[in-house]
Amino acid sequence: MSLPGVSYILGNGSIGSVATADDRVGGMIMTGQTVAGPDKVTIGNAYQIFSLDDAIALGIEESGVNAYPYIQIKDFYTEAGSGKELWIMLTSSLVTMAEMYDETDVYGPKLRDAAGGRIRLMAASRKSAPGITIADGLDEDVYDAMINGQVFASSSADNFKPFRFLVDGKDWNGTVADLRDYSLETKNRGGVLIGASELTGANAAIGLLMGRWAGTPVQRKASRVKTGDVGLAAAYFTDESTTETFENSWDAIHDKGYIFFRTFGGKAGYFFTSDRTGTSTADDYSSFARGFVIDKAIMIAYQVYVNEIDDEISVDASGAILPIVLKELQGKVENAINIQMVSKGELDGFTAFIDPNQNVVATGILKIKLRPQPVGYKTNIEIDMGYFNPANS
Image (tube, rainbow, N blue to C red; front, side, top):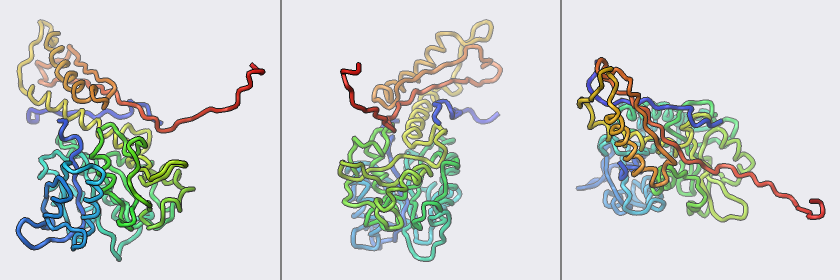
C-alpha cells in the first residue's frame, strides 16, 4: 500500500457538452537575456514581481536587451493591474517552448516550484527569429510544446500543483487549412493563442491574455464582452496580417481550437474569441474557465481532507460509518466550497456524498464523491424577430 495521502479522480463527460488568494497566480517563461549587475535578471532563474516597475528594476526595460519580455509583462499589468502576483523566467533564445514545458527539464518545473506550486496559469513564448521549421501552419515548436505542456500540467495536478498552460502560436504561415485541428486532440489543460499586437509581431500577445485571466474570477471567460475590449488600436494574427484579413475564416479558425482577436459589428474595440483548450468541445474541460474552476475546487477539497489523513473514523456494529461522522466529513467540504466559490458566483452549487457502507475498517480507504455545479455561459444567442400584425391575430 502506498503512503497515506489524498488522491482524486477527475470526472469528465458529466456536463453533457456537444486557497482563494492563489486563484490567478500567473507564470510566464519568455526569451530574454541576463543583465549584468546586482539584483538584475539572470536567465534560468525564477522571479516574483507585482508590477511593471518590478520588472524594470530587474533590467527588463523597453529599450534594452529584454525589450521582448518587457512588452509581454507590460501587457500583463495593463490588463491585470499593478499588485497582481506574477512569476517570470527568461531563457536563452536557443530554448524552445517544448523545453520550457518539459517536466524533466529545468524551466517550467523550476518556475512552478519557486512559486510553491501556486501558479494556476503558465505561458511559454520563444521570440520569433529566422531558422524555424513550419509544421501545421505554425512553428513546429508550438505542437511539441502542447504535447509537453499537457504531460507537465497533468502530472503537476496529480501532485496538487494544478495549472493550465498557454502556448504562443508563433509564426503562422497565414494558411487556415494548414492549422492543426485541436478539436480532434486531447490537450485539455492548454491552448494556443495566435492573436498578436503590432508590437508582438510574429509572436502572440500572451501578456494580454494572461493579464485578462489574472484580473478576473476563476469562472469568467477571457472572451466575456462585458469585461471590455483589450485596448488595442489594431489587432493581428501571428502571420502579421490584421485580424480583419481573415474575417471570413474566423469561424474555421475558432472551430480548430485557436484563440485570437475579433471585432463585433457596431461595437468598438477588439475582444478575445474564446477560451478554448486543445480538445473536443465534448470535453468538460474544453474551456479554460471550466479548468480553472475545477482546479480551485480540487485544491479547496484537498486542504479540507489532508487534515483527515490517518485520523480515526467511527463505525457501527455492521461496519458502516456512523451518520454523525458522515455529516461532519461532508459538511466540512460543502461549507468550504460554498463559502469560497458558490457564494462568489464561481459555482452554482455543490454537493458531497459519502457512502456509509464502505469497508473502511478493512481497506483504510474513504471514498468521497464531490459534485460541483458549474455556471452556464451565453456563448451563442439566437434572436427570433419578425413583424407582428395585430389584424392577423
